[in-house]
Length: 418
Image (tube, rainbow, N blue to C red):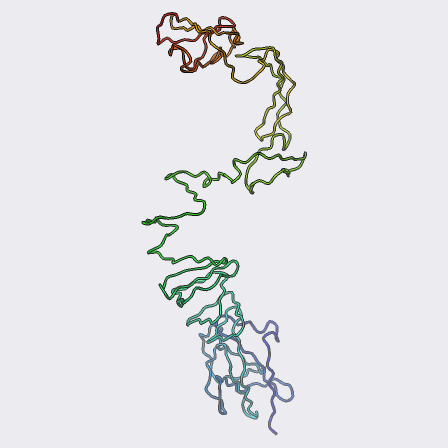
């Protein structure tokens, strides 16, 4: 009675530690041939044919190898070893495996699939009605896409061929642009998600953002224009400055609580992230001591009005100290604005010094202020208000002889009493 046989197809993980996964471009096939008693059958003939195969023995024979790189050819047919094992490498695809030998009823197993290495799959052709997702896709032929293609990373190509469009496409989806050429001029254009068309794009014509451009026709700019200059001007906003639409608007009032970093304003403004603002009195406590009370002394105008002053110091971090104790003067003028006095109409000139007499008390101290660079007040006799142009102008006084006279020097002139 002839010996019956059985063949059990083994997955690569059936014998842990005995079978290594395929590498390179080849795929590995491992099986065991058993007899009817379940004993591995040694010396069985294993014939591997390419699909579609025909005949018995099958044909045509396939190329099989002993290594994953498919460089070491293996005899075909091959044979099982003393434990009934056989293995080989072949290019990914479909095969027919035929088992035969003395005392064995020949068995043909068609459509045995040797898959590609998932880490580096290789296909002679791909046809898909769904999507194809790949970390890396290498093509030696052509890629034809009837729908759309999305590339998340980079797309490298020696030549990218675009079919000219009779009409421009619509707006791109969010975060993308539509790149296309037009049949009318065969030039390159693109549209962003707003549907705005930009183009034609060309290195030979059209304005380039990174190249000098010459405009021979008037240009209309309907939005802000900012330049780093130097010609025609320097725009501070290009160097981090800010000039918002409310730069000349009325001031608003904001409040902030102790320990808080948020200020609430009475009306909206155009503050933006990154802007710097100064809020006096807010922020951390200053690192410097509160200053002493100031000594207040009226210098160039005196009177009988009491005025009180305090001093606050500011540290390097912008912290401001509490106000000092109050310093008081009782000899301040009633008004802190510029004071005007009428000249009586007479003045004298002697040795380069003009002495001018006012119609009433001018309230300027007769003693020096003690300030070396400015011991007395500065005055201005307005032009065309006297009959002596030499007396008109702005002067630093050199002396105040009395409550109704003052003196200044004009060494470049000589004159008689007026």
